[in-house]
Image 1 (cartoon, rainbow, N blue to C red):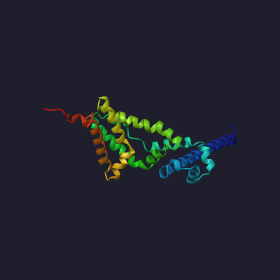
Image 2 (cartoon, rainbow, N blue to C red):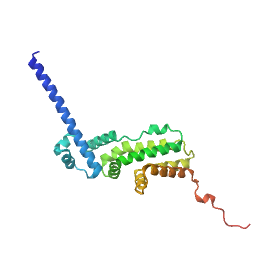
Image 3 (cartoon, rainbow, N blue to C red):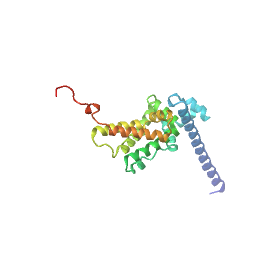
Length: 222
């Protein structure tokens, strides 16, 4: 093989690699542009034209890389999750004491919320309005919440009534809205976690039959 042929093949390989690199860079810019818009205005208010403008590309370039809303949202979700990994639920389950486990879990989750509250708030708000986003939340977020509840309910109430109440209280404690309400009231993340953990413990300890169980009987004569 002549040296000119080898040189031509080398140039072609370089050109193909360079083209793939540019394509990947463009895809990354589009994804990051969409993510920033999702964080600031929300997925439901983000348009392809807005994404293209922010990424510095044409509208058709966005469609070339992401032909559907679902593909762009999937890319955004994966990119954001990689940069903001959820706390390790498996590490929580390694803590035997349920109260210590809950305190650790809420402290870690509330710290995670603080880092991504703008994005999570917009995503939770807009998921019912954007089918592709709703599908991502159904596949990723809500199963994660279910896994958190299961991990944190272990070792707590065993009777059916209290167990159901504990799971309900855990969902409240784990909710972004709970963290927001507590911290907007002036609590820091640690204080908010302590208060929310106390709420779960109270839900577990309260009498299952309610106040009527301790009310003395009335009527009749002595």
